[in-house]
Structure formats: C-alpha cells, structure tokens
View (tube, rainbow, N blue to C red):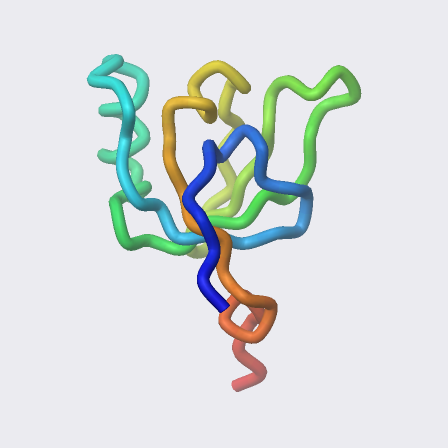
Length: 89
C-alpha cells in the first residue's frame, strides 16, 4: 500500500514517516538538516503540546521540538506500522 506525502504537522502522534523534502529554505529548517533530519531519514511524532504547538519528534535517538509552522514545511511519507516498529535486537 502506497502512502501519499503530507506535511509533518499533520502526522498523527506515534506515527512514523520518511522525510521526503523541505518545502522552504527557512534558516530554522537548515538547522534541522544539520541535526540529522535529512531526506530519507525516518522520523516519528512523539507528542504534541496541549494546543498542538510545538510537536516533539524522534529522529534516531534524538528528540527535537519543532514549531507547527516549521513542521508544515517538511514533507513526509507515512511508513507502514511494520517498518515503523522499533527493532527488537
């Protein structure tokens, strides 16, 4: 089953996705790339603040908080639950 790309800001909590591309050259987004949020990387939404902003995401072993407006400029493709499940090694 193929999933359509969507903004990271719309990815549900506890869902994982693959980063496809950045929709802006905003300097803050450049900083996220420097922190390892690169196209092709897996990312998971951990939780949202009560009003929906910011969004906490996990990328590798790192947790980052992202403003909703910045997350809207990151296009992701949801991963099937099997791909998104953590390794049991």
